[in-house]
Image (tube, rainbow, N blue to C red; front, top):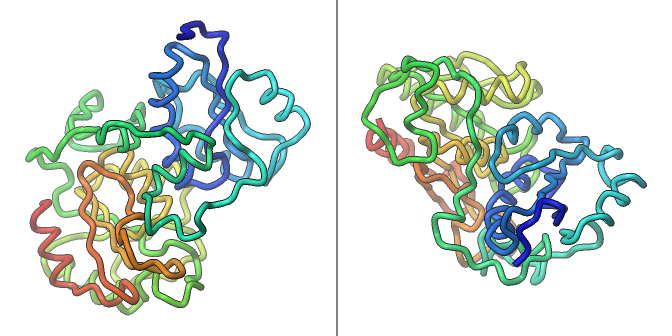
Length: 301
């Protein structure tokens, strides 16, 4: 086996927030197969704002932002050609197209990267980010007891719940991947009555949910930093929630089968989170009962 830092690996998933997080377990695969290899973590320029999250990751030696906004430039390809192992960057396709009936996002991301023998231990399939920044929790700045560990009974900002309400600014799936404004408004009203303050995160263009404190005009990094200071988060199968999951932040994922012909393996798209709980309804997440969500909140808090 190669164990020299001059053995270079180019990867993994490049262009979307969630995809970058889904690619993290492939780093463990590479480290096991090529111990002490030099791993270049490639991020397309359109999601360059994600770079700070990967600082101090023990398996990332270099963070590389591409020349092109949504693709790869001449110098990007030169750097890739210098690497001993190259993850796929062009002309890849999902095989089969309804892969989600057979594999989850972690397994599919590995296959798209060209890793066909990806078969890790279950705990490896949970992406992990290393938190190097202060989140403003009540415990001391140096204490991050919840990170990558099971739920602790220690209270932090007990009454604050963060929500990432929409997977996209406008849900165009027609199936209800994201809850409607009414669903969220009713959910927030119930949470308020139970004594919870609710922070709303997301895009500046997102529809506003009544009776929430708005943080969706901050940078993505700032939003995650604040969200990690709350007791728990609620959201969809979005990149935001994949990031929260990589920090093992207690979370509820609102799930439905919104992709075409998704009939099996219903939690294939659910963010991996050691402290996450998946709540599912067919034909749109508006069909998830609010009392089911409240019962799950009670189980976390």
